Length: 146
Image (cartoon, rainbow, N blue to C red):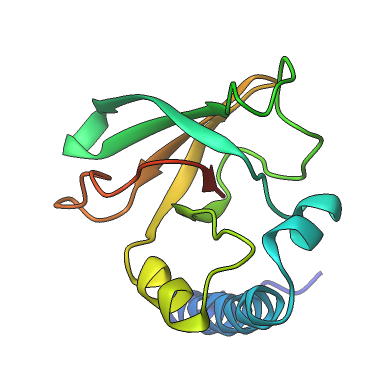
């Protein structure tokens, strides 16, 4: 058996470049899905959760804002619809667009969206830690979607 040394810096550099290319591919795929499908279609496919309401907001570890999102009581139901969102997923939290809104209004809604990481995914609620330290999630009113 040959004793070969592993070049750790080269291995780490190759892993980082692979991770960067994977992130770029997933980001472009997600952007394509978001631009070509409605939230309702994404929800049916298990890629989004719609009709959420902000049930609580707190400060989490490292000063991050943690949002707890539950099913909107006006919609009914005891818990969240079936979805494929798991702990550790990077998500975008935003106001759910209404059916008759114009594209300009939808674009302004997208600018207020916040990105975060799912820290808890249960049958009744999702908890999301927002990425930006200064992002308080104050602009969220009405129905939300992830």
